[in-house]
Length: 383
Ligand code: M6R
Image 1 (cartoon, protein in one colour):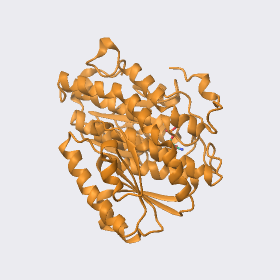
Image 2 (cartoon, protein in one colour):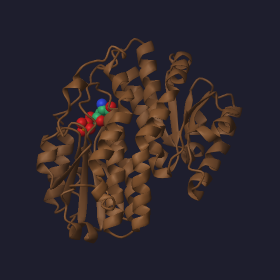
Image 3 (cartoon, protein in one colour):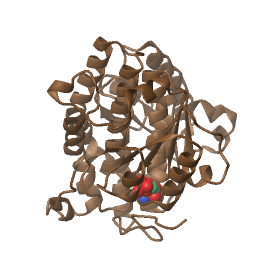
Image 4 (cartoon, helix red, strand yellow):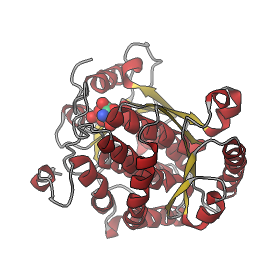
């Protein structure tokens, strides 16, 4: 995969690369899905993963190592792989893993996630995982990057060149790749039947269209940004697989707007954070669900109770919810960013879209150079 030159040019329709890259996500996901699934390869999930099936069948553990936004994608991947392939998964900061003398991994797979493939911390984690005997696979956006060259296998994310410092399209492309990897592992290890594998792959094929629909909340996120731009602190809440999206929403806001923001698991509110939330601290709650999935419904109902309680105290809560639930959620939330419904493991890909847009609009309204926030660089090649 060559990152195409057209990604280097700012289309006059957009003011910044970050916005262009947010809106390029349906196309980026389509590109990835087309690469992973070919009509002849309907049951295999991933073409060319370059790791032998015997090893994948004997795997006992997966460790995902990455930094920043890529680590948040890895945290979503943990849910995907555990649920699809019934394998224990750990996620660590690449910068921590390389210094903690991890246990040997003779039947382990280390997945190294990196947009650039040049992040020093992630490269060091790769060397450490190899030294401990793990097989390694890089999930990377840049062809022939050091990480891709040095891992045993590579899965490219095919998102095209990303210029803005804040990762957006590479993040959703990483989620797409991790889902495909989970399906591939599940199929190879027979935790998924052929029928289930096909259903998951069908859901993957519908993803680009759903991302397009999620982008429909652009105007509302701008309106929300206008009313929230002067807040000094934000709290993002997500339960289960949405928790890493709360972290990513907070990171996007911090790096582009310089506003303090935290991401927390919704279920942790009553264990401390509830005390600091008042009408001066806006809350963004992730409230999507798949109504066909009992676990997803239960989590949603519990989060709705919390929404009601927090909103009753006069806290300004904005929510991301599925279109079918928008009306119910709007009874308590100030604004609802509606996204389409999807299988529970794919909802994070849709949830992040309004949060990226919100961060972008707040940053622009605050006069930040959004494509190049201060003190950050696109590729962090030193520790
Ligand atoms: O290129 P990588 O994915 O390895 O980069 C890792 C982080 O430095 C990166 O995700 C950083 O957190 C972004 N600026 C987030 O938007």
